[in-house]
Image (cartoon, rainbow, N blue to C red):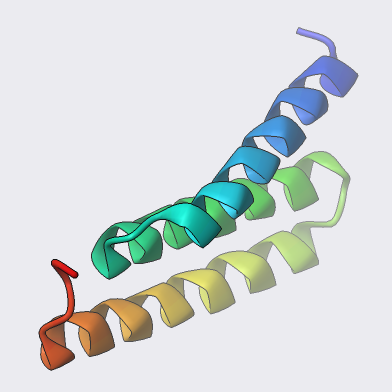
Length: 80
């Protein structure tokens, strides 16, 4: 598969996930989609030839997702 086509697919997926986070009503689902966004963004950085940014994005994104997941479950707003 051509690298440009693969990059286009990943960037399109990023656009869809970014927009879906804005419109998802359930907070827990939004946190999960945000985590997926972060993982795909780190793959995009890797495809663009920036492994240092890919690692940073993966660590920071997953860390923030875990913190947001803990907060949402702790305050009991996961189903609202």
